[in-house]
Length: 461
Image (cartoon, rainbow, N blue to C red; front, side, top):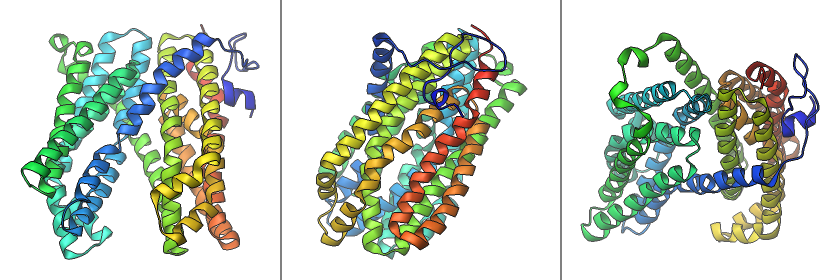
């Protein structure tokens, strides 16, 4: 694999089956555009986990500890459910970006409507299946009878936000695909503001307890849904929309394949994190807690790198839709350089203040000692993981979900094998080494396919 191709994209100085040498030169204007799009997207990413965080903070100040436990269990349930439906956001971004680049407004409108209808349908299915889903999840998670009672109350209320939450994924994908980064930030921030205001009033003034916490999230998600539909409505062409257009067999088959492959890719990623947690638990409570703290620290870098990946999705899709090979090359160069610089800065930041960040997360001596012992792995991780994030963005923008699925399955398989070997040799250090290899494999497996993708999707200027 040509490393320069992986890092910076390809140029269009010739055509055919071969790709010429990449150029690293980029203009300040190119870098500035990437940064202006990435910054609000990074902030938007940071707001997404806040719904559960706000609920956790409010429940932590209730009289009964079981309230906090119930919200924590409910948060795990909803994060798992909604993360599994993340394909709605990713597939919509790629499809909308390509239609946007090709200036096919009717096609763009149809993609958005299909995504919104799919989000509504899946959300209604979650509501219809709420009892078996909730009871299965709470049975797996365990907890005391009182905690389960509180979790059931929390889940039973918040579950009615499922259609709104999934439609918001489709709306967010639309905003990203049309490069409306500030709109994405406004949508996410509005949801958080409504959640905090409503939950505080219901809990502090009305004394609804956990029911008020869940209701605050429910109201916030539906307000966000209405706001989001209003934000994307100008591109929907409601008066011209026809059902036979929405129900075109080829378009629906393409959407199904994209969503299926991205779902399998996401489930493989979830499995990798689940295996990492399980292996940490085998090593003892202190190691398990230390790994959890370090993953929270590393998540800060993930939000940043994911912001650049989101920009790459939108701009790659636009360049493919427009058939602009030169623009495709420029996007790959500029976004990759920005992501690499960001990864280096994150590593330097963790090296400088990582120990202080660990102190913020816990005050337990045994956990502190273990977390600081394994901190070097988190310092290295952004430099290893950046390639996977960046290539994810390229392949999502190119709507190459099959490649994403295959790469993640191969990476997961490699992680499981390496962790089995390395943990037996080096304990938790071996687990972190295997996790770094997993991140590296994500980049390598996608990088090996990049040349072929460039040939397939970019035929000429």
